[in-house]
Length: 234
Image (cartoon, rainbow, N blue to C red; front, side, top):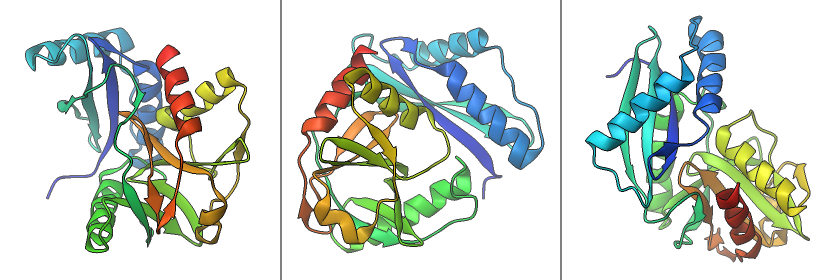
């Protein structure tokens, strides 16, 4: 079994890694809190090493790709290839998967740790047993994430998101909403309100994924598409 680690997945647009400084900053904050160690890499050097990995993996220059950054409890850093995208930039993905609500909680669930990843993998298994590819995490009656990524809802042209710790992906959505003049409110998302939402979507390193259904409730993706477009322009 692997030792505990923190992680971030970095989006490369072509061969340009995006927001490496913010990813490193978040890792540094969690490393100090959870592992009691310092992590403050030279961001330019880290970017160069990420690009070098992309070149070794022969990632395409005209599409997006991903590199995973892991930080072990002893301070060891790992850069790992994490695949390529069919799109250029953080686009709205063409898939609109169905989801079900899975009630579970994990220790330090807000931190990007290996423990959270393991809990999310188990939640996906539970969702698959109910015929859905995506698990929406629910804890204490509040919907928190979808496929282990920040979850957003749209209602009456307002974008709603459960109060959550900072993440690069969450901030990208908030920045895009600001550029579009959309209001973003921190508001608990609840299973008994699913039928009130016009859209449900989540944001991860790939971009925006709009849910087609959650617990059988159908959703649109008009606002999600606008937000993804703004993220690409930003």
